[in-house]
Image 1 (tube, rainbow, N blue to C red):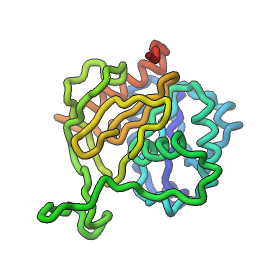
Image 2: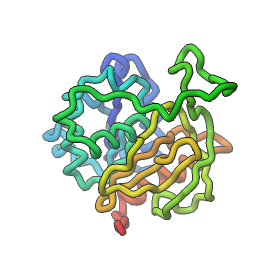
Image 3: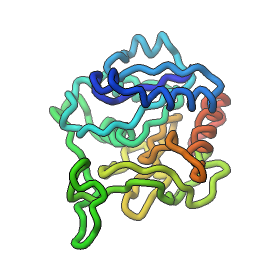
Length: 233
């Protein structure tokens, strides 16, 4: 079973059916049923009871300052302790950076970490709807592999994936390795040195023709989860 954790506010989770299309894709690519839970429904005890073969954390569009930090405690403990293969996407990738760079129980509030402000003359692709005045990666972008990893088996370099963000992980956490970058966002993908824990800034689940590299990335991740052939170096 694949566990897909939706990281949006619970009221947003109840209103949205977008995760259902992701669920279907994960089931197709993994060959396993996929259970979708909101992060507020997840506890260490439930996680241990479910014992999924793989864990995926969704992206989210809310600012970090809108979240109550204690709501991340259970997930923090799970991520630090589990050996189950895990993929954190977009906002969850940024959350992974916070959780492994900080003692989350000593933090009162988290704040967005934008890539940068727009330079004079640069277009603003979301002037009213999404953080006006800040540079964004929005659309399909080439991402450069900087360290070989089984997650990228069979991909060209660079590979093309969907981006939708204005923030980033500013500092690589201890015990993580940098895997992929773009010119404006250095930490596009990272991996824990000793377990199956990945963070990706892009959205591999949002593949469409002709940009299908995200599908292969997910297939590789589920292959790792099935065979556990990953070996940290």
